[in-house]
Amino acid sequence: MSDNDYKYLTPISPSDIKLEIKDPVDNTALSQAQDIFHELTNANDSPEKGKGPIDPPSLMTVAKRLGDITEECDSYIVTAEEMKAAFDSLSDCERTSLMNIHDRVKRFADVQRGSVTDVEMDIPGGKAGHTVSPCKAAGCYAPGGRYPLPSSVIMTAVTARSAGCQTVILASPRPAPITLAAAHISQTTLFLRIGGAQAIATLAYGIQADNAHGPAIPQCDVIVGPGNKWVTAAKGMVQGFCGIDMLAGPSEVLVIADETGRAEVIAADLIAQAEHDVVARAILVTDEETVLEQVEGEVRRQVELLPEPNRSTAKQAFTQSFAVVCADVEECIQVSDDIAPEHLEIQTRDAMTVGMKCSNYGR
Figure 1 (cartoon, helix red, strand yellow):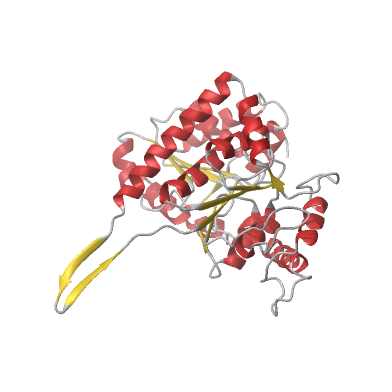
Figure 2 (cartoon, rainbow, N blue to C red):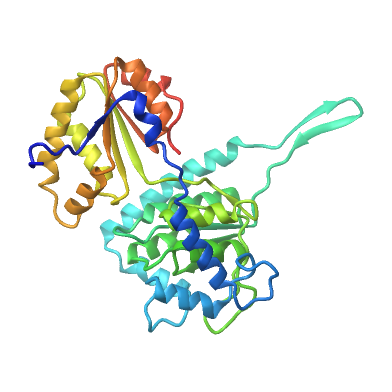
């Protein structure tokens, strides 16, 4: 196949959409996560291996083997002093941006919390109602992959604080200074410098006592935040023992576009998602074949303008990306609802009207 014949957005029919709806838990990752859980608890007295308190030396062994921390590191904890030092080291521009993001997220989280209130009503013989109370300990996960994601820190930890959680524990492997700074400004109680399934296991089952590698870690009542397939598999293992936000599949964007959509803008937004991760998906749903042709051409042109490693990452992500040509915008909406994308973008005439007809997105 020549380069000109290659399709970044593989065309599929609306009837084939169900083949693209994937189980969020990867079976291989689940098996590997189970092995990690067993290794982390092999020194404790739990009758069910993989479901007891975490053994600190085993945690250090796994974290070093999987590249969370260096061989020289002797602790799974980032200290409060390190987090503050990272915040102080930021440029004025970075610090201002981080503080503005924190303020915006906090104000919205406070409004959300205020919208959920205690209620009570009279019933024959007494009262009925409910009260709203926060979890004691919230576990927040922030990915530590190709690019730092301080936004994940703020959107989880700040929300937990606004909810009234007394303890907020953050986990992120190989944290960049901006990640540490975000944890500082978000008032993180403890920062675990570990990731993957081993982080989720530690957040769920805790560490019983202070030890040579760090302090005791309380069991978290809920675990939230995005992560890779091992994080998702581990969340599936601990749900029921503690709460989780959801089992999220690979990150994705879906764009609904008609003939009014600008191909260069649509392509740029698809690429922005594709360069995020090699397992990300960029999806175009349109009622016009010409729109697909124009966007395909723009994707081909713009991808080559990316620096490395963004270009290679995007190209790999486009191998599982696709486009759907529908009969009309109503069918585009149905296809989008069937896929239930994480990110949904509408580039059509009367975009708000089309958007309000969409039901499944944002998770």
